Image 1 (spheres, helix red, strand yellow):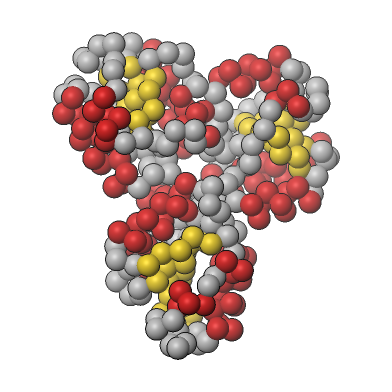
Image 2 (cartoon, rainbow, N blue to C red; image 1 turned 30 degrees about the horizontal axis):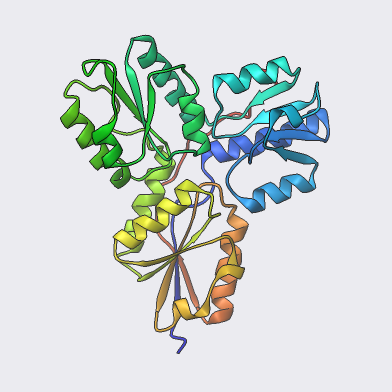
Length: 310
């Protein structure tokens, strides 16, 4: 039975400043140098963004060696290892670094701790592009910690010289238990309470607010998007039934049966047009009221990157 009447939109939602900067960087490069422009990996983790840029002449590559010599190559918002930068230089590529400035700040933190002789522990997901880039800023004595179990078993050279950083797209719950385990093992460990970025935290906080007003959560975001997955998990932990969808075509009507309202949010790399597509689908399904949480205005902005500079 269709009982859906209300759509409650999260605010803030969708693009963060780092994603806006990365996409603007690609578009600026297209304007200045013309297609094709090459990007190492996905510029951000959203298939719709990738497809839109491909239509404009952007070519996404997984290997630097496959990019023509002398071409313009953009590093994604997730950042890259030093070895990747060096390889690009050897291959004669003209590089633009679209790494999110907040991720770049984690790079500098890792480099500082490493220079001071610390083993550096990166709390994050193995094989995630951001984590691989952070780990690759230094050589040796760096460890990725993805669970409390790994925090209990990691081996370091000197327990008195240990530091940690965290992946920017995690949730506080992801990192709290791990940090506690590390602090128990290494009482003098250094590090921030969290490197979770402001946009990730803001979107997670709003999901908790949505949980007080509705029982079903739709998160617009690609399956490969870490922060989108975390939004769904935050909603589930807060008592909601949560679904991660690329766009409105992923919605299953049975999810909404017996529900009077549905909360909608979007990961930091999901375009607003996809959210509006979900709203239109829900209105056609029967929702008659659309409201938006008051939210917290985000005023952070970053300038696009240019050739040879981050």
